[in-house]
Image (cartoon, rainbow, N blue to C red; front, side, top):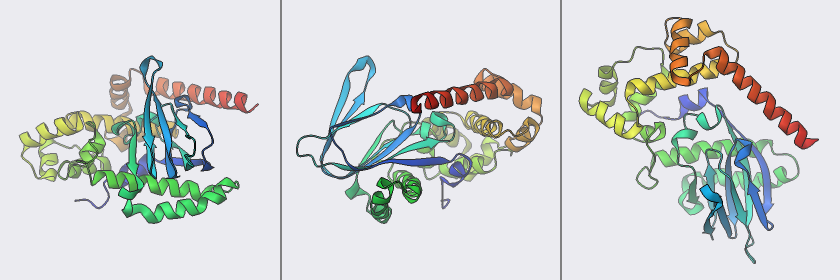
Length: 297
């Protein structure tokens, strides 16, 4: 088994945490999906009610009465209510994933992951450091708390990878990485996307027959190996375009023989040419910046 199944993904598609609350929960708080961010909250002590918005405007309610970690990998409007005598205290951060909800890991996780802290003994030292830094974050010095949230996230994901039976995962990359045999093939594709991976070579990596590998991959990951590799290459191409890399260089890095070949594959997957996609992303960024400026103003 590879030592770090998440390493390549998070080297290429990073996540940035920003601490925004450290202290008691007073009354009701609301966290809007419209910000386009994920969230991670740690209920350090006390109890509170969690509200999730559902279609039709109804609310799903859940009571937490022990220290708990709550992780939203994708935008989902939610709120917390501090009941009378609840005494709840939280440390909270937003999570900005490269690619937003299309981040390869973020899109492959359940919409929310809720884990009691007593189950997370393997990462209790990180939690202790985070709580120790909470006071600095409250006083306007959140830098270390931000980094600790990022470390906490990686440790949480590793913890989940080791316990797929406890926390059922939807078909996708994360479920594949949690599989001891498929992970070998997925990591190989992630690390070397430009290689001409055949089903036979990938099956050999996984230690399976060609037919068993193809069947298992489709069941667990939700795509064929060919489809998954193409999606990974397009995700990397989007990352390169966002950084302003020349399309010819991107094509070579992700396994297409020419810029025109990449453009055809990109258009087939996204419905837009690389230049159209990049222009749309820049316009969306400008709109978000204008909205933030108007809100602050």
